[in-house]
Image (cartoon, rainbow, N blue to C red):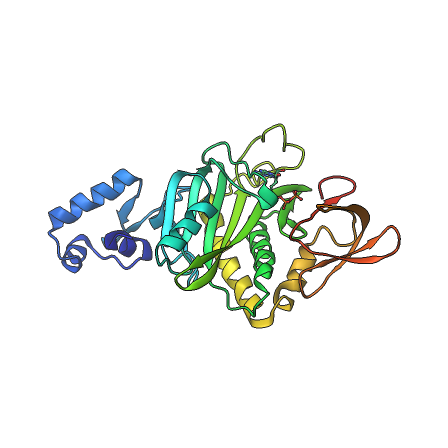
Length: 324
Ligand code: ATP
């Protein structure tokens, strides 16, 4: 990120003369650079003492405005890839991480995806620009071998906790769909990427924020924060809250394994105790969801009274009475 923009975003900028001196440029050249930032949509403004900083516009996803709102130590503090339109934030971040030495904590975010992806080759729809928050974070989790799949549960916990900050009461449909009022509000897709630093994880989360309607095909199971009543939800504030929550959930997962987040996950679960339909590649069965174990698997008591361990990889779990 441009050094001027970084200083303005992090509150390290000073008065115009002091800032020009720090950046080794004339006040006139600095004025030109500030105008260029304004043309990109930034709003650098002086406080009473003349110190400049950014005053982000409502809902702005510009990288400097995101940086200005961060309360994290690392997440969001690598590179921030932003474009109004991307095919998919996961695809862009994976490509950048594989090609360049991106630091962990790097972020990809956009206003609209043209080829958003879900699990099992499914599509994730973000048709209207500016209403959704598709974002992906590059993570280097410090986890024992074989535990990387648990990251997706930490992402669900973090996304739900960030939504709870808007005043809504989100639930988690096992393994990683965040629902509000029985409909899906966040879809999550975590993917591994091979980099110079070894395998990293791209954690993608698509938040439905201000959609007023959804395509016919998903209307019965999709909702947005706006539709659920959080009319003031701001995508930048939501993103910054989510990154803080993700940093917290990942730290707990790294320190204690799944037990570090399981109580919170379970408290938000809308799957446990419910009648569910488990839809696998070769078999579908009905039962009651009983527990989530410390490997992240769901235990279901099927209708033949057999306890069955269900892995998230290749199944969908649906409520018998509806989506949840
Ligand atoms: P499910 O149990 O809902 O099938 P999943 O984890 O298998 O969950 P995902 O990969 O999270 O599914 O998401 C893809 C599915 O979500 C699509 O098949 C579609 O039904 C639905 N979907 C697509 N776009 C959206 C959206 N913006 N909001 C809510 N649901 C969506």
